Each structure stands twice: as C-alpha cells, then as structure tokens.
Image (cartoon, rainbow, N blue to C red; front, side):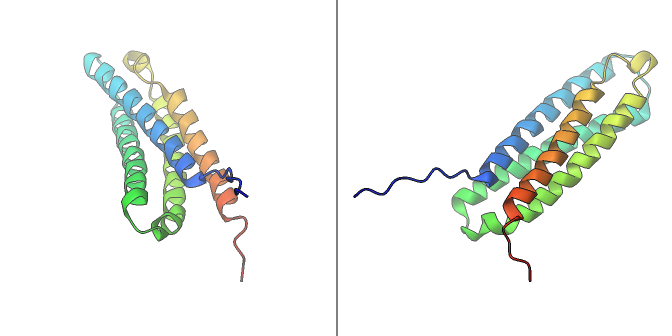
Length: 147
C-alpha cells in the first residue's frame, strides 16, 4: 500500500521568502527616495542618513535570505535548525530598527523633503517584520521541551 505524502510546511523557507520580499521592497523604496533626495533641495541630514540605513537593512535582509537558501541547499542539514534562532532574532531587531527609522524619516519629511520619503511604508514593513518574526519564533519553538 502506498504511503500518503504528508503536506508539511517548511516554516524556515516560508519565513525567508517573506524576508527576501521585504528586503527587495525596502531596497527599491530607499533607492527611489535617495534619487529624489538628490534632485531636490532637501538638506535634512537625519532624513538622508535614515534613508541610507534603510537601504543597508534592505541589503542585509536580501543577503540573509540568499545565504539561508544557499546554505540550506549545499550545507549540512543541521544548519537550518542551528541558524533559525539567529536569523529570527536578527530579523526581529532589524524590524524594530526599521520602525524607528520610519519614524525618524516621517519626523524629518517637511518643507523641501516632504515629497521624497515614504515613511509610512517603511515603518509598516518594520512592524510586519517584527510581528512575523515573533510569530515564527513562537511557531518554531513552542514545542521545545524546557529543562
């Protein structure tokens, strides 16, 4: 008798696909905002610095997900379970940082800089990253026995 194939969801891969998509969105938003800031008379240094940090965080998220998929394909199988906690904790911290940067960008989007920043998108993505990482952490580690 043929054994029925189980439908299992690999939460690690699902989480990293989500992180990759958020990273691409952040990178493209920040890149567009940077071009707009260079073409305007915006002189807000905190806005420009925060936008550069958002660009870096987008790049970090893309690198996280690509390295995860590369190592899960070619590295030892214990890599996935060992690195899950590190990835989730890092994404959680980056989500909080994105939320703060979105607030800084929102506070400095005045006068000549008002049309150049999309702060609401940035802080919403930060909140999403934070919530999804907490949910993933709970789902992943809720069945771990405590000693």
